[in-house]
Length: 213
Image 1 (spheres, rainbow, N blue to C red):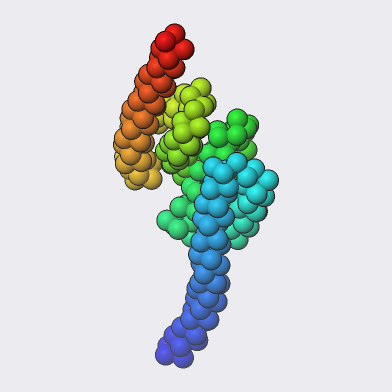
Image 2: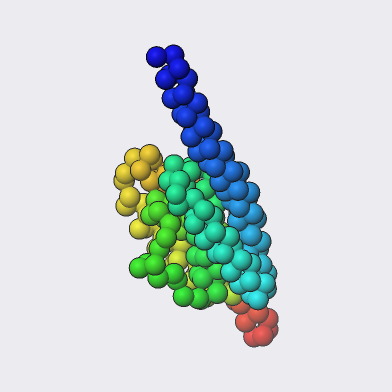
């Protein structure tokens, strides 16, 4: 019996060792790719805010490729695919996609071709809406009030839809907290735009008064 047990344990140990070694290598590679993906997405968004669209699109294309590679490598390991670091990286990819599309008046991704879990996707959309505040402030400083109004309307539309998701955080991936944060960002941006509009009207009134005088 002891000999049989030893043989069985050796076989088990060998099989488990091979499986765990493979998983560990895939995990290490996924961590590396997720960190790289997050950096690419952040750089793409910054380039978009600077209106460096060739650079932004090139970075987003590179990020999409890294995301696809990561997803393909993790396909045999669903437990690793649904870990926090993997989903965080994919969320950042969604944020970059949506932010650049909304800022540039570009096309939004087709919904029939999503390859990212919906709870991760909607969290990325929420963060993209918050990211639009930076663009709003930039265009307000340039006096482009109509563009600021358009961006604020986009933020508002995202908020109105996402606030209707009343599922537990375990299902949505913490969406409620991000929507609450978006509400604060939205209200601050609305206040900034209102103040900027009032200041613009005041300056126009002063200019008209000077012309009459």
